[in-house]
Image (tube, rainbow, N blue to C red; front, side, top):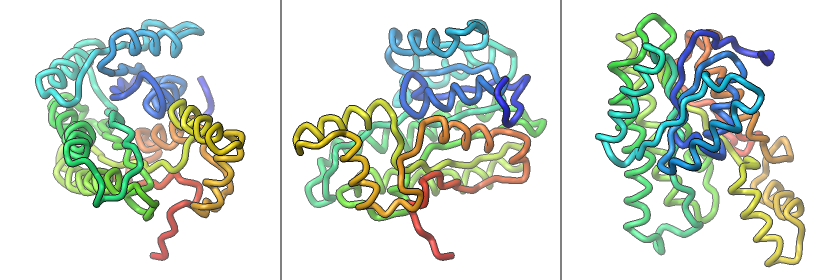
Length: 269
């Protein structure tokens, strides 16, 4: 097991776990000893991801689940399946959500924004509602929501994403208050610019249009956004932050948003 927070004996459920940040978080939880169910809408993709996660063995420790977070019945069925798998549920990571194309708010497509609210904000709520009856009350019960730096920093043309993410921050705080009496913690991580498959592909395309390499495009974005650590995050760094919040080392942390953005956002107080 990798060094870090010990999650032996824990069962986790990660939405959007077939790629990107969801996959990285699932990998971090698995490396620290948890048994992990990953969910996505695409059956082939989620099964392939489960195969990659267990390429070195431990196939019995990962469960691929087909689920659509926009469908309450699908979500309820998925959570029941995961609980039945190990007879317990300790960690839920809400990660599934769309990556919206850049757009100023006055040009944003109403239907696309509504869809983002349904998938991410209301999707997170659906998953939490379905998970709460199953989550452990012994102190290991934890929900981690994936927000995004746009909730804290004004980044040009990301208003549609930002208003959805801001809703997730509010959801996290209210849910933490309401779940505390059940001994369940609720927190969020807020990643900044991260080298996921989606962003690597996008910066390659941007570079081709601009006559630059993808690395030059990413470096330019670092400078433009003023990221204090002067680089993009590796997905493993986001996974480690989620694993920390799910662990006993964060046992007195709830209702908080951990900004894992290299200093992109710059709060004064």
